[in-house]
Image 1 (cartoon, rainbow, N blue to C red):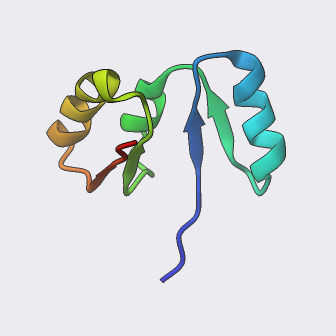
Image 2: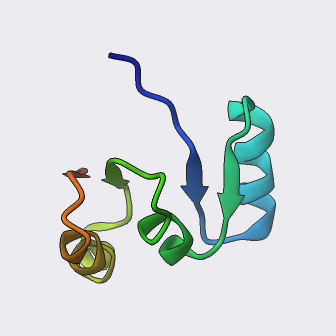
Length: 73
């Protein structure tokens, strides 16, 4: 199988736009992580936030029954 990054959520509009440019191929950058979690075309969520910010993203992703990769430092 092949993985494709479809959306990237960042804290700032500038870094969201930079992610779009850097990753190319139709990647969408956003500052609202709910855009990623609620997108019906997203198959897997990779949570790369600081540890104390994992839970708010994790819970809605679990409600959607998405496979989740939660990164630790």
